[in-house]
Length: 435
Image 1: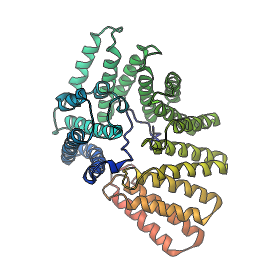
Image 2: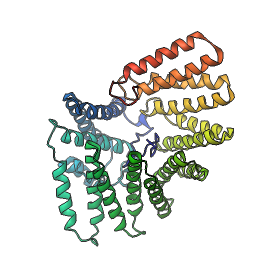
Image 3: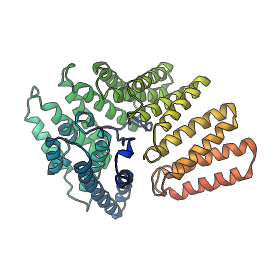
Image 4: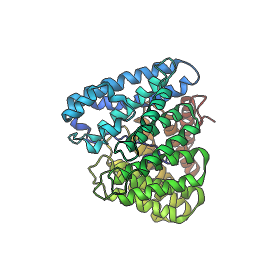
């Protein structure tokens, strides 16, 4: 996927990012953060399983329980929330579709510096609960009723009412939830139409306008992923551009909108090859990095995205400055990510990939040796049941194969085959990457 932040795929909503300051929490809490990330993977695996049989419901229930318990335990004990937020978290309304509109984005809540833990906790909880309620046998199939009710409520609110954009945005999120569950593109179309309507109702000086435009751009990118219609990505880029223009540099979320714009421009470059797009993508990614201090836990993701765009331009122009710069950004992202961080394997994987690209150009053995070391470290940090493990093993195998071709050490090709076989074994038969 062309991502908003970590990978190349844009996804709507707030980016999940746990704090790099794990030492502020007891060890058992840091471990629960890792388990919660695994719980998110369990829910996604359950989604695939439930389409064929019932075992997936058990995984959804397990993740639901983990997320709920961890949410209330962590937030009540370790985060300094104001009374209004405490009451909201304690209420049954926590899992409503308009959670983020009522709670605000993490930076809008007084959390004593732990905003990103809240973001990760809430997103995983809502994902699990939403899946649980929509899975046959796992809860009430109420998404259709919810959409009908939201449509009726929105129709009763005049366009000039200040609550109308929020109601339309909530309705859009519900349509998208049903699209993710059932795959009906009509629901995605309906979601985009509501996001557009919500944005249209706000004046350019309204503080929520950039956020509404960014949500619209994210979903247009998802529409592009399915139909490959360039008009979708052109419109998405247009919405992101306006969001960036309207948001002052002091707006904490501007860096997200800059990197989303950069990711969309990179995606369009990959489609039509216009160098202006990849040049502009790099400019916007670099601007996002420059707006973010090194101590910010969001910084590594921004550095990673900048590195990916620099790699992309190198593949086109073969300018060594680009791949050197890409490696520098990926190395900085890795350096800012502690070993216990759940995203550490992805950072190591990205750095190893950049080093492999430079090795293939210069054939410097230090590059391939370092690439293998980083990929091996990523594998070592990832349990076998993690959904990313097969991809990490595959990349390690590719690097070992590249070194074998350079120096002819039979141990390298033996190890390469072993890692590639493990990747195949860990990939379920129905997975699109299995072939």
